Image (tube, rainbow, N blue to C red):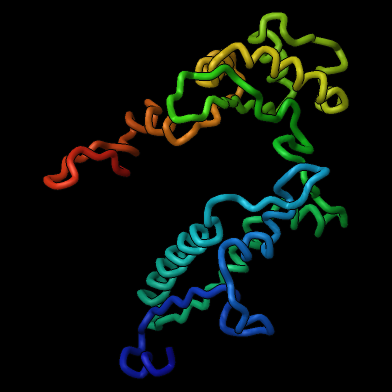
Length: 249
């Protein structure tokens, strides 16, 4: 950057590396699959009795690209005001660490580790994914799942009403603490109910009742989702050589 700046004093340059250009880890090699665990994300992903589980997507890569683009925009604003350029030394490790901000802040403020909760949540219940009926997929996978997340006590009676007798409405379950104590029993009852419905149908029924629910979409379900097509997140494009293709809008 110092050499380039002699040619263009107001140059804005972004350098994206695993651990940055200074510090004891500056020469360390990096890859998404190592950055995600090192940043603390994988430590809280998995089940209480199991090991850390990294995601199947290059999460630090994507987050770092977004953060880098934002840093460039900020530098452009600063250059407009001051006439000065910037060298942005972006460390993907730092970006990954900031994406694990809730467990990090929890430890910084309480001295306690966040832990692994699977699909459950330490503050909300019910909060899980539940089996649903096969939807006729011909892709060799018949597993189907429904996600439900109750954030506050007001949503509990709505869930009970929507399940129409499949879930008990005990007084002690009106509060999160009571539902958390009996989480296994409630999850079993919801699973029995959801197993007889498709994930899309069950989600629509619960949403109509004011319960936050969604299908766990496979790629084939994502492609068919009407919300994405309505907002033109997905569009169909015609190409002279490759024909008709679904592409990001």
